[in-house]
Image (tube, rainbow, N blue to C red; front, side):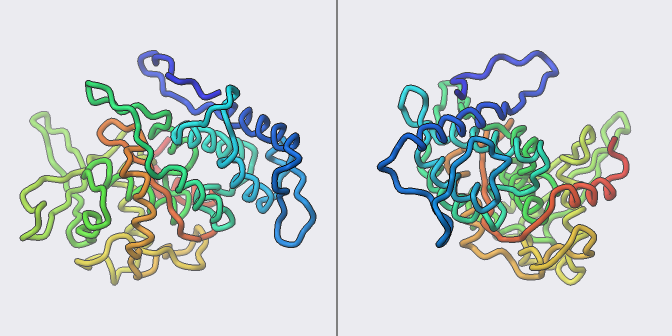
Length: 327
């Protein structure tokens, strides 16, 4: 059962996702569904009735994708009440973490084989209104750290890298709509360095909005993360640039690009010169409108429906080679 309130953290301690909550919910759902003789039987195409099993790791990708669609629609709390959308998301992240921990590389939120599930799951997140306390704290069971932990943020694949850039621009710039994100371009996002009175240098990204826009007088920056280069906005943006064609790097009308249809981790280019369409970007931002992810500055969750296939371990190695200073 997902706890209603997380226990207090010890100073210096990082809150961790507990995948056992998702696994326990999955087993309860399997046992419940087996007992429901009147419910629709699960099948894949014209195949025989699908046998639902408690061991997630024994499910094929096709079986798991189908079962997850029904899981998010039918799972209840032990007392029979519905899960809130953020609790449901927490459970699914636990399932994702369990797959990764046991060598299953598919991403249930982004991989094309899970397209139906990701579509159904997004609908579950729509309209969610989290609890906001009088002090302005937004209570959500899903936090930014869980997304890094479950490889939903980082440079594990072209799709995840795009999601991460979107996340950073939401978190640090406060962009929430497609129209706001469309103001970004390669020509207007610059890598800068400043020195403090103690002669300490800091690198950051600054967005210089085009003139005659509502943002032209605002200072929008992302500061480097020197403690963890693999989560650093500056380095991840530089890595993104390294995987884009030279022909787009000074464009004033491009920023988020579609991944190449066929690429491997060692491919010199991961991204085409075609911009993400509005519908795709809007789909990524839908849950963000409801402040889904708890972060230090802004609460967001985003999802990607792009259909590039990838292998996480290979892309992770590629990124580690790009950031040799990380230990």
